[in-house]
Amino acid sequence: MTAKSHYEVLGVPQTALGEDIKKAFLLRSRMFHPDRFSADTQKREWDLANEMLKDLNAAYDTLKDPASRAAYDRSLTQSFEEEPLREPVRPSVNPGKFNIGKAQFSAIPADVQEAIGTMIAEGTNLSQFVIRTGNPALRFGAMAAAAAWYPALFTLLQDFSWAGTPWKILLAVSVFAAVCAADLAAGLIAWVKSPTKCQFIVSKLYFIEISLDDVRWWPLWSAASIDTEHKGTAENYRGTECKISFENGDTITVHLPDPATCSRLILTAKTFNEVAVGCQESGDGEYLKTFNYFDGIEPSEPPAKATRFYIIAAVVGLVLFLAAAAMNAAHFP
Image (cartoon, rainbow, N blue to C red; front, side, top):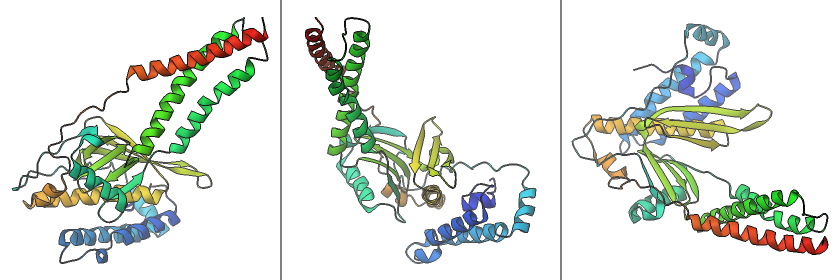
């Protein structure tokens, strides 16, 4: 097993400032302090929290002092690679099938819908990581911009004759704007109707990505790597991207508001994975059986939008253009 560097333990890059190292240490110490778990009813989590706190203290004791940090940096002959999450062995109690898949949210069993809905309602806590993704305001703005083309089109018809080349450009833009506006409007309607909206969840066994009525899931140990990128500068910070790559070639990128949220996502996934591995290595499959929400769900492709939908939108755009063209011809006979 590859040992983690002190920087990996704290979840900061090797170039992190002393202030960032201190913030990361305080955040992780609070999140996974043993006092947050019961030594009686949460023995496994309590033991793991004690081990993690020891690692955090050791890392911070080394990196908080410039001299000891410099010596430690010199000892690093190469960058440590992120160790993939471990896949547990099969336990004595069969927890069901673990798979990577996708399906329509409305088509999965009602009890799974309810379990996911409960996680979303509760939000991020010690039992899961939940964050809303997507921004309907951007979709609404794009739809408004596409629809605004038609008032502009009917304004242009009085300014110059379309008898020459420009009418071909106007025709193409009109059809394209109609198709885009219809597609964006359909997305907004789906957003309003969706009970989940768009979410990214780290549950006790799975990464779960929900996009309106589409849901995808991956077992935690199927993650091959987790990479982060902080956008902008310290003076102009624009969020953090967390990119998760899976063994089957899938990748997902989660946009996060700050480095602390990113650290919480990664730490939650690693903690739950270690708990799952511990359960299986001890032969206790009840934990996995309880939280294996997607056992028995056959992956399926979400239905594609009907071609007829786009054809109708294009026809509407064409009709609006022809109406404007007729009015233009009346102005410039």
